[in-house]
Length: 211
Image (tube, rainbow, N blue to C red; front, side, top):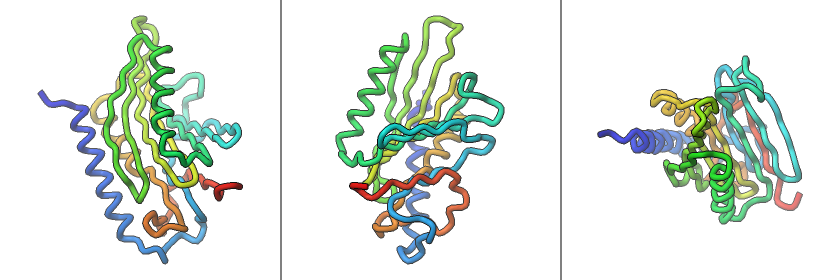
């Protein structure tokens, strides 16, 4: 029997190899003049809008929803978290342990399925799936894809959450989306920024360390 999770792991690896090839084709001198330092490049998904933006200390959170949905009533949500100044490589383990603990406490059934660990554009990345389900059939499940990128100036997490069980095609589409989410740095030639950032609606810049 074909394992759909394994299929999506393979798809994500192929997509990231394509993205890496595109990045290597850029030269450091081609850096987009509008970008400075380290940046998260993230497209706004088609048919989505930015529904809310919050900041607390050095952490920011942005929520994106389909244009006809609200933060109280939604079926799909993209969440972006940025933790500025969090350049400790141990933060990934702390973050995932915290998320697993929260889901174990809130859900009747909680599970985590890793997809990939690798390096994209010079940055360590992790992609995984978390499942939250309830014995009460009236309560909607929450299925969430995560992409964690450990930057030099910040840690970045992009989540794609479903309030239903997505099909294989939907998972594949959103894995393709996550493969497009990347971090670049105008100061480091091994992490080049693209020439054209017009498709990246959400661009977050991490400040210089110590600012």
